[in-house]
Image 1: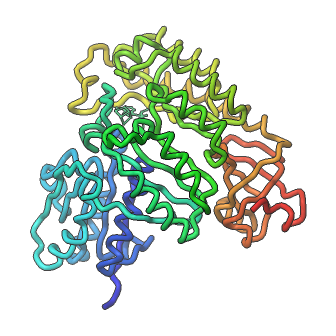
Image 2 (image 1 turned 30 degrees about the horizontal axis):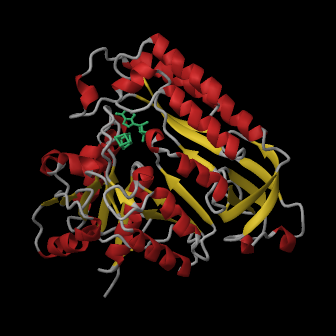
Image 3 (image 1 turned 180 degrees about the vertical axis):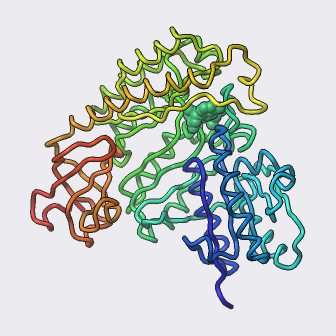
Length: 448
Ligand code: 5AD
Ligand code: SF4
């Protein structure tokens, strides 16, 4: 049978990136090979995001372009999956005539069946039911593109209902996979050559709450740490309220746990944090950061921040700026508040005009860039252990590796170092990366 071509475009978070890896693997089972050339494809899937309005606009404009391809090739199958698909369901078909199927966040496992049905009978399909069982969703091991690191879903959904956020409505309630399933998946990944895993979930540190078997996120990390072959463990995303002392201590005790935590703070104002329903005060957040830095001085701390939340006064905003000056994050993702249908924040008074949100965002981002560069400069002349992931994007004769603290380092090296741990000295810091130099012979720089 001739292979058919699949083009997947992923919008949004790492959860979507991982879902796309699963989709690609599932559809290879029915003869679809992934391509980077959209014009050659027989099947196009957009894995959508709807966390902010901007993300949804990107999906619509891409669908406009893709619709034209269908005019030239009526056999082309076009589908949407992910959060926006979950949100709109059948409405998506009414909005976008070119779509053949709409499949929600808990229905990836149904895609082979959906595609086979469409090949036989071109009737529009919508599948957006929630299953609320991870085994029904059929998660399996998929190594990342580099085949050195991999994402592993440990839980799905979120119960937090932060007032601005659509995720709990679109990804369903929290469900954790059993540690047995997770460990089995990681052992398979090790057999495929994987050295680093990133544990994925909307709120990983509430892992285990629905399992009632005594397991929690810390015990899971410790079990994964015992797997021979796994050298690095990362996780994302964690909620500051659920960051326990036990989990923080893991950064000092568990050798394989990388020195990086992404801990979204969202705002520096207690009044705004309460309106956001975040469940902590800024003093509690700052105390946790101080503790993490005390027990793990190398740790890098990154965060998410929203500006222009309804009712955010100049004073509230200034409190966010002051908090950032005090904490000095390694980097942050910052966003203008985006109103989402059905969320509690949609009903709040005091909406901030777009141009004011932009002014607040730009000022904050300028300050963050200064901090990021300063943090990177602090690493100049230090020795860093890198896991070499592949060729550098900047130059074909350079390689790219990542420090335990999740910083990208480009350095001159031979391709046979890819997949190895090497030691380099940081020679120059930039805003988005570092430059490194191998100081010893090639053989001696290999740590393992
Ligand atoms: N508006 C702006 N930013 C948002 N985020 C989530 N929902 C919204 C929204 N409605 C941001 C938060 C979250 C990150 C993934 O996206 O900062 O941590
Ligand atoms: Fe959204 Fe809050 Fe859940 Fe994160 S913790 S996914 S921001 S509701």
